[in-house]
Image 1 (spheres, helix red, strand yellow):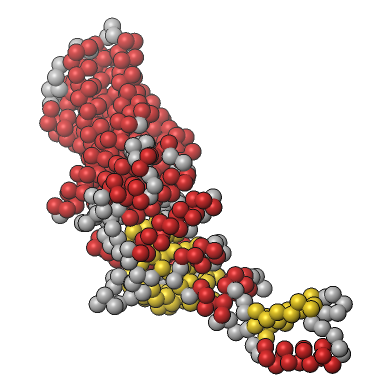
Image 2 (cartoon, rainbow over the protein chains, first blue to last red):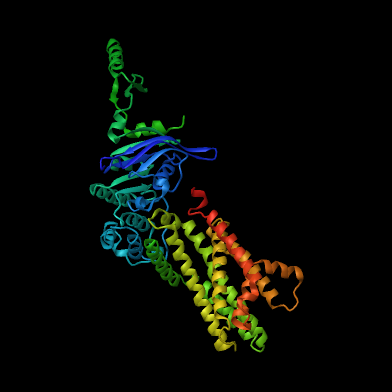
Length: 284
Length: 250
């Protein structure tokens, strides 16, 4: 039973009137995995995640989150998931400690409030009204609220958007510590680096479709081509994309040797995740 | 069921705590009607007849401001700030949430009515309410109707910045029209017809019977029917159009 995937999505689509935000997505997330949905703004990441969280009804497809259909919005399921929304607000006149005590009371086996405050780096602000907290502190409170119920599965929708680099590193450390606790994490981001740093597996989303998915390292390697670059004797930079680098190199080097010249700055590279991402998500 | 009640009780306690910590909410919901009462009382202090009219009018206003106005403000604020969306994702039954919010409104209204009754007894030469049971029924029906209408009206308000304009565009005309028709000895027929079809005047007339003149609720069944109809409309629209999220973040 525990071998069942945390999330299983088949043929998911979501239509708003004429607009198709999600067009047939398949996702499987194993337990304990950090899964990243990477894509530009408007790609359908948030819509997808909000269907998984139970906020939106799907138009078609099947969805199982911890074995249940989130569209039914069962209390039992909601007790087992934690949600960090892209922009979720908090009551302005309570303190982080009070907020966490309140949210902890909604769950059957919450974590200790003091411990969660510490994990989120909010111990010093624990008794400050939330309306006096900075944006970064509020975001840490979002994390803390999502964690206080000790959920098995955590959704993080653009968790570090608007963070400075230092705050981003700190958030990444928090997310890694959650992974080390064995939590399953679904993360959306439009920062490539974030997906690379955190995710065990990444799906690149654009226009409501998954264009590629796999572990970040293999996504680049699994691409169907190699890139050969060199400089001509005239100083012109040339790039060739090919699936068969052996033949191309043989021809290139043969030509160069035949005319007694050189291939300056010759390199053969497999595209990085960044290049795959940029290429896949580029507008034609 | 007991779990829903327990969580509703926690929500209620949270709402109470937050209410007293928000000075502007406490002021507008609480002190404003009392200021009206004492300002009006000072102006009308020579005439017992006018004071007898003032007390139930302010009581009716209190019901409307602690429910309709307060809920419209709160719901829009919480919706636009994303608090409602967060609550929606938490394992909190919808009934617990709204139960806590509604109980909070009832508490505010009840406190307010008690203050008005005491003020009438102590300062305005009006005795204890002659029809206490009728008073309770009127307040309850008024709370249900105006709370539901406040929740429903929140759907029409597009953003928090415009909340005051929207709420006052309804609250003030209804208030002045109802006060005027209630007080005038011979109001124009069309104004009277309009005011009687709105929920505030029937409530004020009912409260007047319960608090001052001693005419029981049985003599105001038509007014009670108008209020009940508004309550039904409010509940229908409030539930049907309820949005947990900002419109553009759909």
